[in-house]
Length: 117
Image (cartoon, rainbow, N blue to C red; front, top):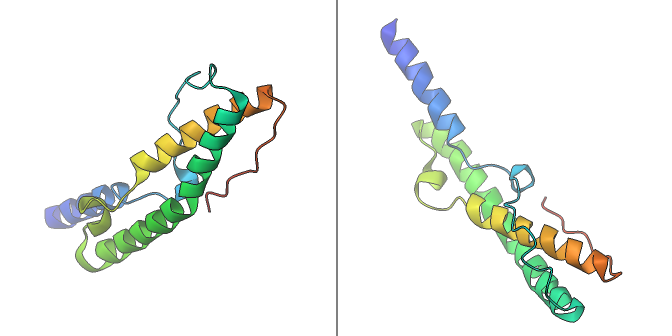
């Protein structure tokens, strides 16, 4: 009985450590870091950050799939443990994009929305 409880507890912990879907990751606040940036520079920075998103989404979805397989077969979220989980990088990129969007809106520019899959 105790072994079943321990096993169930370990499975819950392993599942909790799994990589999140890109759309489920919260943005990291960068405050008003871009408030003093010119409108043209903000637009360039926004485009550069937005260009990173498809690759980040693809890699994160692979990490999610890898974790699912690892937990199913071994009980261990392999992708998260091997460093394939890009949650921190995605959170930072989302924060930058949100801050740059705010800056661009003050310039009268509505940037194209970013798809986080």
